[in-house]
Length: 243
Length: 243
Image (cartoon, rainbow over all chains, first blue to last red; front, side, top):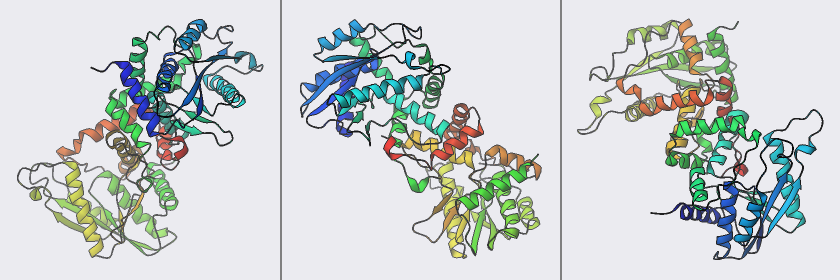
């Protein structure tokens, strides 16, 4: 029987090849929060770098916020994170971004704003330091949630794509876990003992997203087959059969 | 306060204009089952014919099957249906299609097969008698159900479109109720006393479709706003943000 890490490794390989995520000489900045998704991603890319068809470089980057200091979240065990990266032979950098401190009087913290702040800093850092790719740990369930939220709230058939080149910058976002379901990542993280930290930010409740996840569980009956069909529908849009 | 028939009439007007469903001189065959959807459709088109910007003709066509004779369904009150059409000034024709009798030994009846048989006969009749449009009574909930079933079962983003020109035949299918929710049609049918007959075919249970309808009710919380957003997502497909 396949173990969970083999499954994850195979699914990221399929995604990397199918979406042509890696080109020779790519210098990839991997965003690592300390959570299971991006930890599994870093672990997987570190291994693949050793045998992949073409050479590429990776560096892990952790955006350290002031969320714990300001009481929004429990502190992250950054020493643990840094030593995992060392163990896997991945150069590690830390970026300090006082997300909460940047709030202007009257503004309130929310997930979207915090994520945008952190993303912007990652992009700036990547460009200033010669990275041409930014790898993020979003998985299939994240992508389907965003798809449904966009359909239901914005009236758009759109989501976070596996590969997204920025138009204004010489930078491409890649999501190598696009074909992995969260439960597969959890299995892998368990095997690798990467479950020491999960995001504890009080805003991570993110009402809408959690609600959407439950809705998707309901409509798919938690069936991987149906989830994969919905995912596939994104690449099989039939304009003649739409409104 | 608007009454239900005014709402339905307005929504079909918006659909007819937005999707350019009617061109001058169109000769439209309206499929009438005797059920609430197609009855409201025929009623609405009969009224619109009197004041619409461009001239068009309509004829109602009922496909009479042997489903009741063979014990699959309760008989349809065709005399009632025919007299409604007369009342509304719509020429009425009846097509006999022995759907059940066409089953070969070993074949079993199902909704998809029966619907295809009836549709084919309607298309043949339309072409043989100079009709260039075929109007069907599918509404927004039908369209969303098919969208979700196609996403979940076939991995395609596709549904029954409001306007569908056949490639092989000089015939275009139009669905003027595309922007009406079923509850709005029920309201209109109630006002017009068109509820004498609802489809009683035992196969109308159509497990998958009913299940899908319940799922959509769950994910939308039965909100018209969210349903309309999902409907709108069909015309706002963003290829750069898909897999």
